[in-house]
Image (spheres, rainbow, N blue to C red):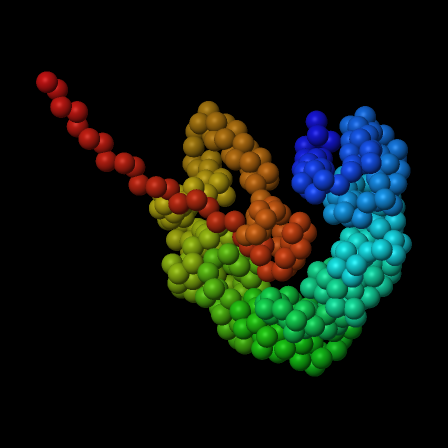
Length: 394
């Protein structure tokens, strides 16, 4: 069934070719039976025999180039990269290919090498395509993918800039992230001034680059300037609650360094502007320490009346247990364990583009490879109960 589904494009292509030949009155010469013999091999899980049939067909019929490209891509999607390479290498070796078809075949072969981990061969093919102005945009994207895997961030920047020059594609977010990666490298090597220069470049290219601001705040803390670091963290908080989980530990460290361990007024002001689960938990701790358990429970009840947040429910149960009788607290403990189990299963972050779920923040999504799309998951608001209409009794 999988083969049947995947071969729909090939079957459609073959039908088009047959119809085209019939319309021209060209003799088939037995080509259609050969084509369907190849399909039959695929359906019978004999891919190597199928490849032999299709390659022989390619030698006598240049119109099947797109079909062979589709077949190679199909093998690559199935993880059978060696078979995809064999098909695409055969096409590249054909002297009868025009420049457009050769560019497609070279690009597909480069994708095969990339998936197989043969980065040097893939890089060579993509560079050749760029030099020959064939499949330039896709080839540059392939080069960026290689350089990202190899953590060659300077080459990523150069290639992204080349992509921007030949297309209208915006790559500001990516280039800013590459500068952040270089800044992180410089910090690990003790090169603070070079790191600061890369952060300035990142912010100049993408003023909304949250990561550059966070790295800069860490640098200010390392330089014993918690006031400046706190200002930078507040700037991040102004962007909304979805980056608060990542920046809150750093902000609390700044407050401790400034001698404000609880900073109730600042926490409350921040929570009022951008309520989020991590900030709620930290503020609850501060309320409990300064105003007592009853005040903390009241705060949580108000919060949970507006948001369906398991972390808030778990904390409320934790505050209730000491005040309950033994029998009731056993039930609460069981309920708390269930909620804790669900919390452990729930993702803390999610990619806005592909929906990838994660327990920690990634600046590049491991699934779709986009930069800056993973953000904290926000609890769903609790909708107001509908107004019940009184039924009329006849």
